Image (cartoon, rainbow, N blue to C red):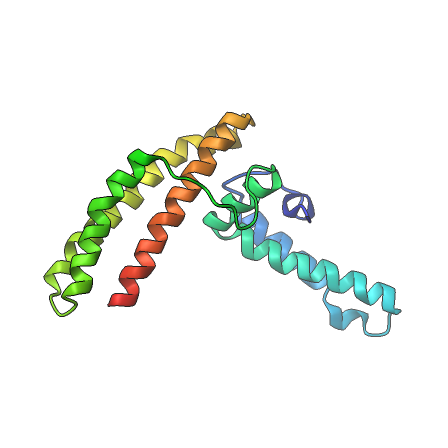
Length: 174
């Protein structure tokens, strides 16, 4: 796994400096653009293509907060690809009302009034999520790298994924 933070020569952070990310992206894009190496041997062309691809992927990940969170959790060995995660029962109980509101709208999609409640509930949950996760990611960015902290952040990562699935469901209905 390519370490995007090492590639961009920036510290591992849930909130990477976006100006620095952009600067390193363009710097590496210029230096390793495959068109500049058309006359190089096959090994060099393969190497350049690999760096160029890693640069594009790094930029895509590091400019997106959710992708950065997933990437750091994978980098630290806390999150696995396609991992099945059991959300806490109390969170799932909170989500029952939201899911019921979405289901009500699904049954009466012509009733726009029924859409307001789940949208407001979802926006409230996403805002609450942000308020709760920010102090955790800040602690990590300030140097705390404990497995317990990363475990908490992982839990919030899966909570947000759940909320975003509901958001997608709502958007498909409108």
